[in-house]
View 1 (cartoon, one colour):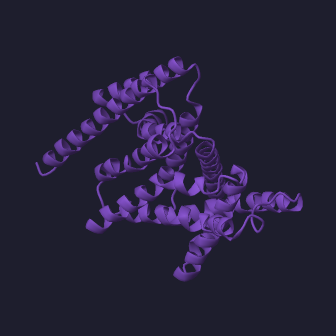
View 2 (cartoon, helix red, strand yellow; view 1 turned 90 degrees about the vertical axis):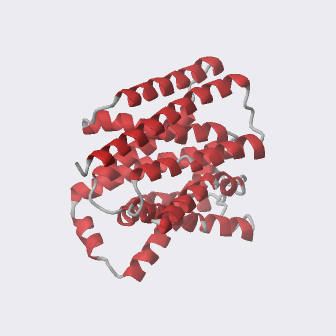
View 3 (cartoon, helix red, strand yellow; view 1 turned 135 degrees about the vertical axis):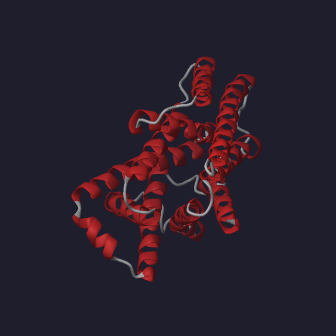
Length: 295
């Protein structure tokens, strides 16, 4: 279990520091960063597949049309999520991006009710209502919907829903997803190169390395998360998941000095209160269930 906890901390810590990585690529258009992330992620996953030697699942998956369409849908959601996040970070919206991942657990819970017919307990209902109130407050006080946070939360929530109901494990599914994204991503990069505006190979060694290492930087935390999820309780995963948006929030406010006026603090505070209620209620519920199991 100790290795699982360390792997989980490592995954969320790396995700929390993503803004630093993308900020180093500030001069590269967000769509090119996204395309490189897709292309190099597939390279990493194919290398891992070659090392493991287990290709039977891939041959079987490529023959199943319904399975392929499922993971094409998941890949599309992932592309929108990644692209929105990269653009937001490099456009000065790190704080709003962190909000998306703060409210993501509540979105997951709501999707469970809508699509999986799960039932909300009283504390969960209150948490969802509080989070909704926080988003509405931010919308009214700023005069605009926090669309970046909502796009990130909704796309990642739907992505998680597909992964929950699909049959492949995390590394296999991610290989299929990057395979689905490879051709459009590579085609876009080839087009940019033909137009003379491609970044790779034209903006120095550091930029080239950062673009190429977008693959490992994407794949490593995902694999660590998969390792952790199989070895530690779901409640522990629930606690650890707040590491990433907390780090992102602190980077946005303290390192990148993004504006955080009092009215935004109030909105965030309402959402944080919802998360505290949600987490506390979940822990107490799981403890009661664990205590009742031997009886």
